[in-house]
Length: 479
Image (tube, rainbow, N blue to C red; front, side, top):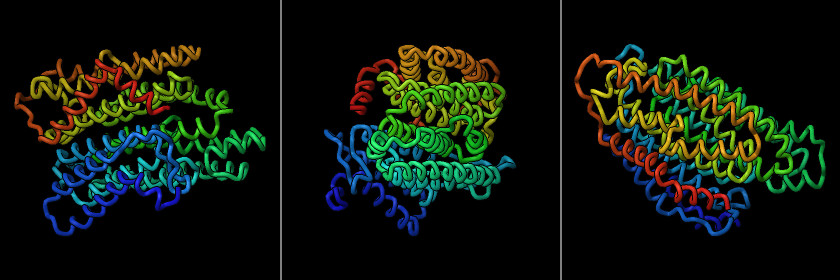
């Protein structure tokens, strides 16, 4: 379709852009910045209301953008993740390195960046050619750098943003180089045409695999896959906590969406080769994440390494790439998004009161805030894959795919890593319930935090107890 014909199918994205520019203008006159965040949430809700399940694949804007069941799934995921992050941000109180409260980060720019981020994530999930994939990834990356360094007077925030920028620039350059090799070999940028060009022209397989490897470097950076994970712990620790929670799930989920499109559409004939590479990277990623997480004393760094390990589990389904594996990737992504966002909402609440993210500050939380401790316990159990929570459903699918595909070594390594992960998750639970609180003063929580917590908590419980509609929704996304 041309640009004009495509516009009626682009309404949710246009609503996001319109809301972003409206918030940017209103920021000049409205002193109450929380109202702008609420306006942003209303814009996301309006965009969500116009999302429609497509009965067929519609190529838009001269085939640079596609509306199909797969993009529909990730569009819903992106809008939900951004909405929950904005809700959590309304309750966030940052602290500086001296242990003093900083000015709240509410501003029109903060909300605008997240609205643009939702738009960029949707582009990532709907792009079907190399040019649009690169542009959407870079758009999301630039927004991520800005959000990471949003606390301009906080040295850790500025340091995290600089590290993120430097590592991200290198990975983007490597990915672009791989794309240029692929374009030189096939003369195409559309993934389907690249697949056909490789089949018809039979270019040297070594060059094709080299280009794919370089592309995976850039995409691996987005999902914090080892050995391209070294930026994640410092960035996640230094960024504002709501931004950290978002970065662990938003760009990661859409990064996997891009990998699924690139491998499934552009390189299906080379599955044996990239499957072996991803299997090795999956084992490396989960092992590094889990082993290093054991020694962490900061909850954000612990969840950062946990995030790296979770990427390794998701890579299991991608490495096997059978029917159960691909379904498992999407199931795991939603399960992980709800669970990790919920955990970071709890972190926001605790850090608001104590001005620190050290695990020691969680002592006696079960006594001082029973609901918050209960919620965090369930989120950690879900991350560990304990039934009947939704994290168990995700792990069940990726483990089943590995066993069905006869990737027994991968399944064994993943099982051992799951046992290691349970140890450091329960370390936090022990701190909350078995270590006495220094004071019995109860903790209070803002309304927006309660809403976001209840949504995520209900999600991990209901989807874990009644997974059938959820799994059906995922299967429809893969039609």
